[in-house]
Image (cartoon, rainbow, N blue to C red):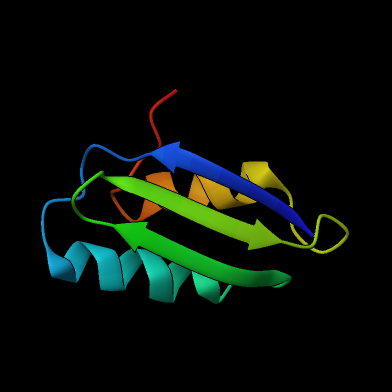
Length: 69
């Protein structure tokens, strides 16, 4: 498992947190997602043999919560 934490400035409410956790959590190989409203950070744990970080990053962009580059 690989884990990465990124800053997501667009997180502004509890709905944002739930949306990110639900959508990213549905990707194959994702074992855990936690979003923190106070710090506006997202931590994802996934199996690199099933999903790449680029796929996670692209999904965050697609759902309106791009990770800070």
